[in-house]
Every structure is written in C-alpha cells, then in structure tokens.
Amino acid sequence: MIVAAGCVALTLAASGCGSSSEPGHASSSGSKPTEQPTTPEYAGLSAYKRRCSQIDLKGALAQVVYKPRQQMTRGDTTTVTAAVTLDQSALPSRVLRSTGAVASPAIVVACVIEARLGASSYIFNLDERGWLSRSFLTSDTARWTWNVGPKVGGTQTLTLEVRPIVRLAPASGSSDFAGAESSDVQSYPIKVQVKVPWTERPAEVMSRLADTFKVAQGLVEATTALLAALLALAAVLGIRRSKAKDATASTGGANP
Image 1 (cartoon, rainbow, N blue to C red):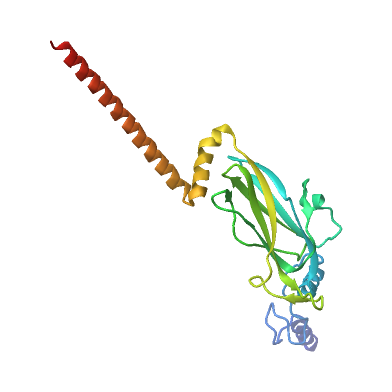
Image 2 (image 1 turned 60 degrees about the vertical axis):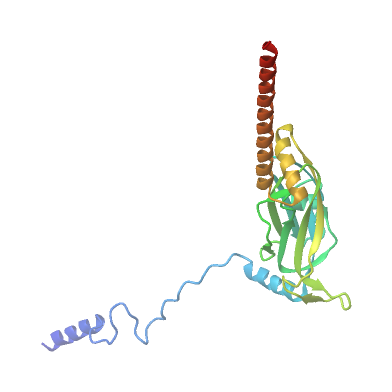
C-alpha cells in the first residue's frame, strides 16, 4: 500500500497536479512569454532614413533634368517628364530616359521636394496643375510625369517649377531649412511647337479666340453658333424678300 501511494503521488506530481499554473499559461518561473512579431522593413531602409535626416539637416546638391523643347499636336496628348537627381555625374538623357534632356545648375534640396507644371488654361489642358511631392527616401532620383493637351497652335510655353524646400545661405555656404511654402521656386521654361491638323482648325480657332478674349471656350463656341444662326436667318429672310420683290415686279409688269 505504501508503494502504491508513492506511485500515485509521483504520477500526480509529473502531471502537474496541484500546480498553480493554468493550462496553456506559463508559470511565473517558467519560459518567457511569446514576443509579438515586428513590422518588417525593407533592406537598407534604416540607412536611407539616416541619409534623409542628414539631407534635411545640411541640404544636398541636386540637378533638375527636363526637356527644354518639345513637339506637340493639337488633338493629341503628350507626356511631359522631369526629374531631380542627387547624382551630379548622371547623363540627363539617361536620367530622363529621353533624348534632348538637359540638366540645370545645381540646387540645394531636402529629402522631400515638390514640382508642378505651369501653363495657361487657354493654351494647354493639364491632368494635374498642383504641387506634386516626391522623396529621396529610397532613390537618388525623383520623377514627375504630366499629360498635356495643347489647344492653340504655334510656339507656346510651359513652365516647370521646382520647390527645393531648402535654401542655400550665400554668406556661409550652409543650408537653411525654409519649408515648402516659403522656399524659393526655381522656374525652367519649356518651349513647345504645336502643330494643328486641318481637322482641328475650327476648334483651334475657337481656342485662340477664347485666349484672346480670356473667356471660356464654350462661351466662344456658343456665341459663334448664335452669330452663325443669325447670319443664316438673315440670309433666308433676304432670299424671301428678293423673291417677293421679283414676284411683285412680274405681276405688275403683266397688268396692262
């Protein structure tokens, strides 16, 4: 009996009977609790963050890459691209992936930079007219793309504007953080030669009139249609009056 009681006691001790721990929970003197999984990060992201902090603190030299001359056709949409790169030795054509690209003199930038494409709404249709921000967090080059539809033929001008956000202090040569709203805006003109196919001539004339009088093109088209209708009505009335006169004259001539 003593041996049997000892076996039962050993069995209960081995099964954890009498322990204060609940099933599924580790005791205070047991293993460490399971750690929550951390959010994964891209390889090298911490290094890019450190670089961005340094750029924001001291500024970095960059060059604006764009095409100063372009060809467009009324009725078609053309893509206009621009870039700002930290790589001073990069070829403009390779940065922009296009021939005819040039690089501007160096500007000082922060890790976040903004750009926009300026144009008269009477001359060009743009898919985006506001400031667009880009970051150097994971790349040495920031890129922008706009879809442009010309309205008026001839030589026109687009303006690429870049906000470097950081300004260079000319006295000491050190950078001075300014913020987007108060930073200097760098402007780069883009000359555009617009061709007008003969099928687009009537619409191009309407756009040109709208630009001349600075009114909506729809108003010009409505006014033109009204004038055309009035001229047509006047022509019809003139023809009727002429016929009536001819009929009266012939009737009067037939009477003795």
